[in-house]
Image (cartoon, rainbow, N blue to C red; front, top):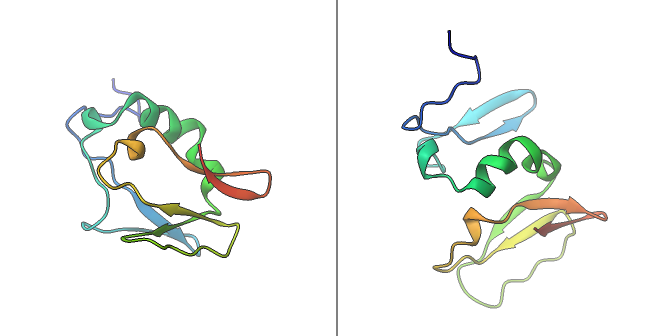
Length: 98
């Protein structure tokens, strides 16, 4: 028998937003096949991402990108692989990429 946490390598990872006790998942979000996730992403799903639940990610498409709050990370991943290795988490009261 398969574990309830069994994930087939071809199954998509459904990423969503939890608001007022309800989960919202859209087809426009980030839904890669499990096999395409990096080791850091798989590890972060169970160990790191929860510490970033209070953080917001602000997408920056061109400089300058002002940010005036400590509860957000600025997203400027222009053609790099940072998204596969970093997580926006709360550290010392501020949200940072780690």
